[in-house]
Length: 279
Ligand SMILES: [Zn+2]
Image 1 (cartoon, rainbow, N blue to C red):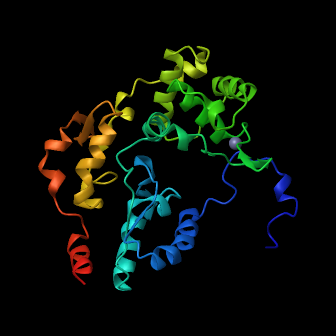
Image 2: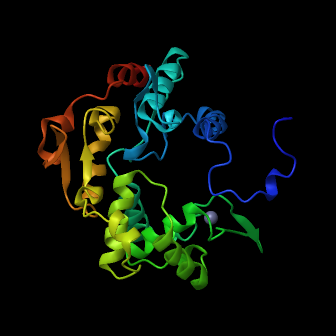
């Protein structure tokens, strides 16, 4: 493409190179396989923060995250239904923050976490893929792992990189929705992993709800996942989360999700799903 400079690969950038429709690329890559194996449920790992509906001068938009939002999942499910494909797309992580997801990953599945490469500039060395250790995402991952008392060297960071990442968190911003970052800084300060300075103190906030299961009508609605998996799934999450909360008048209030009526309400596409199963 003529508007892309030829030396783009050498330009050091701390952001996603192109922030457009990445999920759709993964998704349409996996669809033929799902089709061949007759897989009926396609799960994408999108967390609480990725469903956003905003308005800019009368134009509705999704903060460049449409493909990670539940609106995209539901639109695709309707598309599959129109095609008679018997497929349903959703995320089982919508009630979790990035920090809580990482806690579950590293505590429950350490053997999988060892393969985690969440980096904007990963590279290959002797047949293994390593994170760069320098980008914004690496800083965030190292910070989160340390905040959970986990060892970032398990997934390919060197001790030097870990120390450097923590030092730069003291100076630079992490790119995360405000509240996640605020709680991460709170944990890091609490554990004396980063220095107390005007920057870190200004960012740190004790938002305990970040480590709880969060439910609300828009971003994390039980009816966006099939009813038959809810109880087992939420029980697993609750082993690691500090409880569950529901949004009420813009405040997070304790909510006993496992004993709520909402637990058994039908999935938005339940009737379609039932018909497909019967066919
Ligand atoms: Zn990186």
